[in-house]
Image (tube, rainbow, N blue to C red):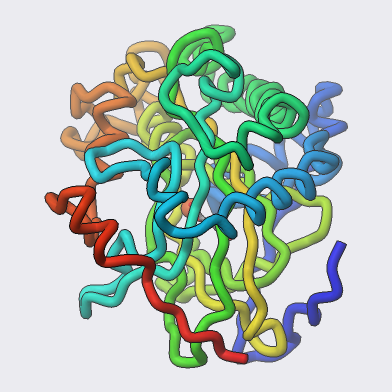
Length: 351
Ligand SMILES: O=C(O)CCC(=O)C(=O)O
Ligand SMILES: [Fe+2]
């Protein structure tokens, strides 16, 4: 894979240990793995997934990302995600605030919608650069399809443990319906030494995220840690998975959606370009994003004194997404010409 320096063993880089779920066993119905998954998702919201089936697509996905994000800024901006709540397409570095002091992110993304990857060469949401299209059927589509299938296995475990009628969560993620699920390839350039944050603190919007990264930098703030940020160490061949807000809400808060962020790589890994890849599984657009209290006594109990505005907002998954996607943007209200004229965010390399 890589010749990167290892993650530093140093107390100044505190590491968050995570439970490991074996996907192969989980898929075969192993009860112990289902229990580990449940413990991880209800206590921490984050876990490793080993023996998953998408690993062969990871390097080709990074290749697609490298070729795409190497295009000139003007070319990438032809596929801009926009600033009105859309996500798929190109996100420029600096599009979001990362701190109250007005600092901005240094991460570029190329996001490919699941529906577009499935529909290609037809268009579900938008078109993509040739460097994406070239990989669409051989890499992006099978990567996404594999993640969709794995997501179904995990959802069925949660469905069971939450005491929901069989297939409830799977139906809410019906892959034949329109949804905002997408793959994301992220580039964080070798950053100046004083760069504090590469991607600001957030929770993920969707149901479950499947992340692969090569270098450290991801930090999580898990329940019970008194707000302390700890690093999650990348492990080759493992996904880092986490619960997003949608499953948090549908489960009445039983499944935890936890805050995380990305810092420039730590220790000897600093000064390297950082690449990561995520598949975001999200509910179908028309799903009402409310706690499923009427279908599970466990969820009904959990939401007895719960925050009505969060758990019973009346918003659909798509409306919720737009609300989140338009938050903390530096380009809010600006027109395309102004954003294009401002040019790419200037990053002065550390090396
Ligand atoms: O790059 C990473 O390690 C995490 C990225 C992330 O949290 C996101 O894109 O939502
Ligand atoms: Fe995230």
